[in-house]
Each structure stands twice: as C-alpha cells, then as structure tokens.
Image (cartoon, rainbow, N blue to C red; front, side, top):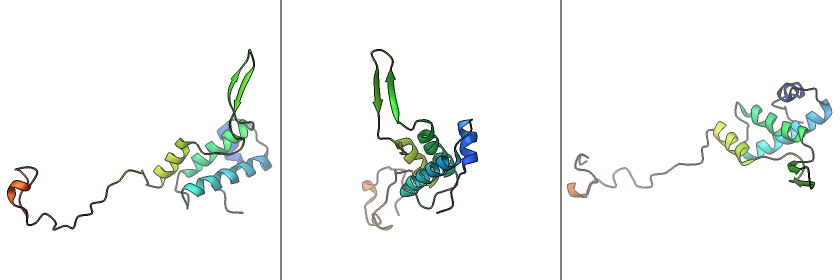
Length: 127
C-alpha cells in the first residue's frame, strides 16, 4: 500500500467529527489513487484535495445531490469516490499545469530579413 498523503485523524479534523478508521483509510486510498491518475507524483498541497474528495465520499455515501421533501424526490450520482472538475483543476494548478499555454514555432531569426514596413509597429526596431 502506498504512503497516504493524509490520515484518518486529519480527515476527522476536516469533517469535525469522529470517523471509522478502516472506512476512512479505504476512502483516503481511493481518493489518492484518483488524484494520482490526474497528477503523479502528487504535488505539495494535494493532501487538501485528497481530504476534500475522501470527505465528500465519507459524509455522503449514497451520493445524493438533490432531495425534495414533498412529493418526495431524490437524485443520485454514481456512488463512491469521484473527482469534480474543480478537484481536477486544483490538482493541475498545484502541479504547475494551468492548461493554457502557447508555443512559438518560428525560429528566432524568422523575421530577420523582413523590410521595416512589415513589422507590426513603427516602434519595433528592425533586427
């Protein structure tokens, strides 16, 4: 079993109530495995995401997302541990992968032989 980034005690503090240690260990392990599927190795600060994912599964095992009292209605997602789009964004951000970037494919001297009027601005000096 890999070393877990958070403990059942940390999960209990996060949830503000006592937890069943065996169940907490299982959910933390599942949450960590899902997080590592997005970013591996887990970056510093990822323990907060693992706690959030495990805490969500611990407090809502039936995965109820909507409930109406009368007439009775309930809506469930797939039960268990899951990552929200926000969890995925948090993990990528912690790993330094924001998702948006650009790559200049032109060689450094690509515009060296252009006449001065082909530059975008008159303030841009010719090479």
